Image (tube, rainbow, N blue to C red):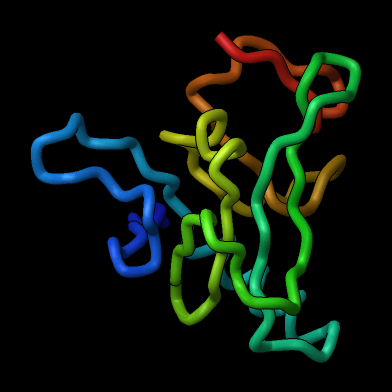
Length: 134
């Protein structure tokens, strides 16, 4: 199953590029990630909530991915994605590190959950949640 490309509309994204600027790499959200998000939001009893994607400093490699459920409206400078009826918010600072990434869902013997495939990742730790950038 190929990921579905999702892009934020300029109305919801004040930081959207103008026609004269260099095109910005977006975040892609796979169909499997959307299905997993729907199941998790329904299980928590908030099917209309959003999923916040982000990056924070810390972890054994320098940065850690943040994925949390958000019951409030997006912040003023968030990029908002709508994928299959699920809203995903990304703050402006995190977008710098997530641009060009694919948010997917992975299920293996050792791991089950959201997984970023980030072309900006130079290396990651053994747990897969912490990374360094190029």
